Length: 326
Image (cartoon, rainbow, N blue to C red; front, top):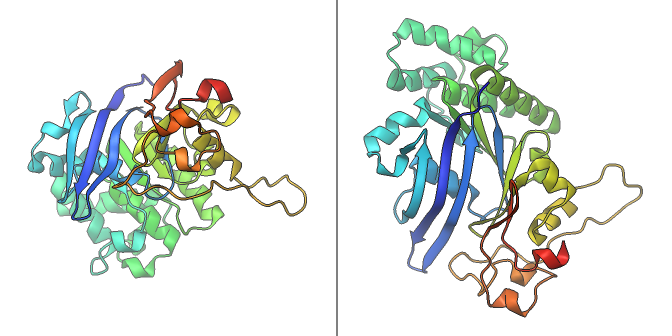
């Protein structure tokens, strides 16, 4: 399959104007996505991962505002599209699966009814055709007895089945891009593995490009080809997944990798952690955003603000001391 550039985000800036001050939620980020690949966006809670994807989807509401940058979907700038055009594009061209499956589904409609409503808005299928397509799509995501389960309500599904139903809804119109926002939170590891296996199958069948948002680098290890690490609203490292694991460049990435449990270790070993917390996005520190938590920080790190720079083909990092600590 020839790789087609689906999404090209360049220097995206999204801010929220609150009474407390300006929240720099997304601060000049760039990334891209090709057909049939999965890109991981990784970072702690509050790093700006979800806001980045909501910006792509055109779902930023007051007091938020996309300040600058471009979001090209198949060479069309989404920031120049009207609200009506974006509503058509969401679900039709770009689908998104949110973290909380129960709150993402309407409790007053059946699962099949909700999937059918999506298709009614985005397709010209008749009611009979939508009903047939709903059963087919539920079957494709591994829901047993799909014709029967289509008549069930969300509370009658388990957490894993609700997540599958959300994926079914997101892919019901065959989108080119599927965004998964922490799709396996609160699910056990067996169900998590099944969900990611399902996504891989769908990606192979439909050629979708997939973006996986997560706080867990272990989750992206077997799912993603490329990874962007976010911290305090910024991408601080971009890399092929194998290079990232073999040689993490940014101190924050190193901290994330060190905090992954090693199942082969013997005895009770205390996991290392990154000290401190993600900074307040209204009151970011001078210099590098990571300097309060970085053991490698020197005087220049508290003065100069590092830019994301390419180190070699396919690898970029925003760190003033990367060459010294590499």
